[in-house]
Image 1 (cartoon, rainbow, N blue to C red):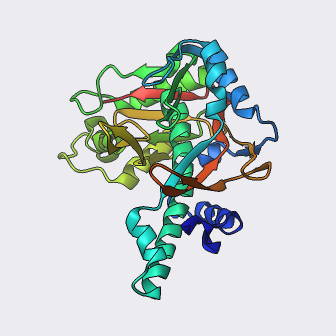
Image 2: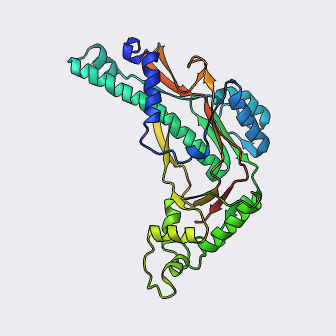
Image 3: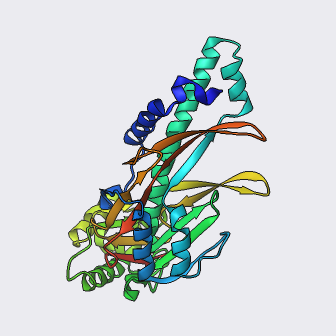
Amino acid sequence: MVIELPQFQKEELTPLVKMASENNPNTLHLAEVFPDEQVFDNNYAFAVIEQAARRAARITGFNSSAPITGFADVQQVSGKLTKIQDSYYFNETDLLRINRPRTEAEREMTIINALKDVGELARGIDYMVEYLRAKLVYNGELVYSDVGTEVSLNIKLDRPEGNDVNVTTTWNEAGSTPLDDLREAVKQYQATNNGASPDRLDMSQEAESALLRNEQIRTEVYGQDNGGRIVRRQQLQDLLTELGLPAYYVNTDKTAFTSIQDGKKVTEVKDNLDSDKVVLYSSHMGSTVRGITVENNYNTGKYTESVLEQNPRTESIIVGEAVIPAIKAINSNVIMTVL
């Protein structure tokens, strides 16, 4: 069996998936506002969900085997929410190239490519955690969906009502005043955070594009007789800083989700930050809670498991982690819908 080869044993794979995460070339923008917190209690995920549920304005389930309609249902599925994991399946071609290779070079390259794919599973966990962080910060929700367990959860956090802002005139319309809208958003943030100002300002690429073409912004940069000149990104950045706003960040991160529809694998790509959103928030939003697992010898961190199944016979490697982001600064984000 392929999974019995030395390269696919736990003692080889565990450091590989750890290294894949540590050497991820893609930045996880929200990781630093949710610093790691290690826990050694198997009920840690339930405690996080429980905390979110008690703050929730509504709890709904969708596409789940048992609809989640209240806190009692969250208790029932909490055990399934403790792990985020994915599997790498060796296909028939892989098995032939490893077990019956035409050349030794073909066999070695197949093994190397499989190990690379296993490393990508580890990064996939990190991307999923980042997506959950994004939903908490940018939407005020804890959104979880797992095709394997058929569990889906959408907890809408009970944030201050005024912290969700719909601008009167969208920023891509004539006559819009985004600078005034941003000032009002800062005032709202301060009103719900004991006078403190937001540390961060994230926006979509579409929102930034609207600002760069906005007449109020153009007038502030070039004056009344500006001749319709284009505002540069650095000019916009400098203007917002001069007005006492945080330096802005354009979040273009996307997360791919794979599901089975009509027996076929389908990939759906979702934006971490919706195209119509601008969000002001704190640099201390919560923590990324990482728990222990049996698979990792009761330690925190990513684990690997080799699995052999019959009827049909398949060989696979599971990569997973007990991890979930927990928001603590529930008042500390003002979510603006600007387009």
